[in-house]
Length: 76
Image 1 (cartoon, rainbow, N blue to C red):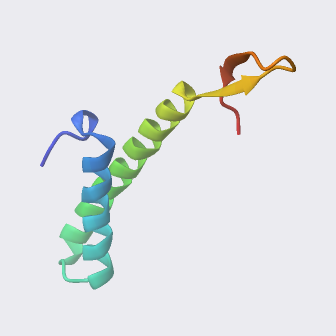
Image 2 (tube, one colour):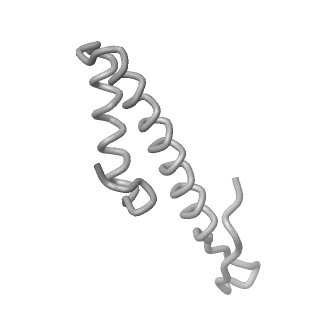
């Protein structure tokens, strides 16, 4: 298994989806289910961190009354 902190968002999300599918099927023994659930929780936190970081980098373009463009921080 890859070290989660080194994973891209896409790789972490793909693995997390696989974990969710496996847990939903119920085909893993209890101990293994607990282990993969814990990894899934870490993957979820990693993905959330990546998304928050990306959101902070996004800027929106705004036009003033004269049509001049500038940027400002993205806000929800």
